[in-house]
Amino acid sequence: MDRPDKLIDALRDERIERAKRMDPAQKAIDGPRLFEWACRITMDGIRAQYPEADEADVRRILRERLVMRRAQEDVADGYSA
Image (cartoon, rainbow, N blue to C red; front, side, top):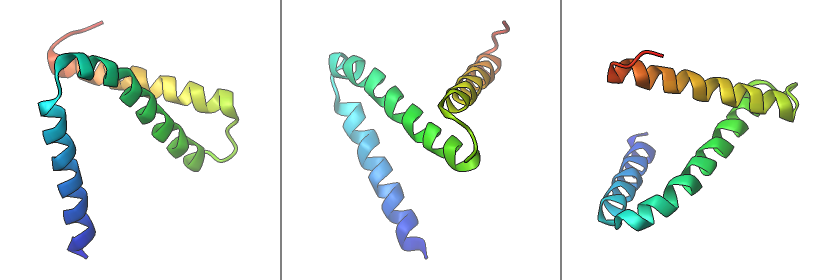
């Protein structure tokens, strides 16, 4: 049962090490691409959680989650809106 977790951890660690070796220009290029990928993954999860949701609902829920995440980060950083 531990095998998949170890594989997942190893893959994550490999991605982290690869990201550390990237030059800043490549990171700037990859940032928006990774954000789009994360949004697609999140939207797939929203569709699974709310199968009745249409595309507008899925995008609205995504926006709400992004706003909530930003607020959590601001609180953690000591900022207030």
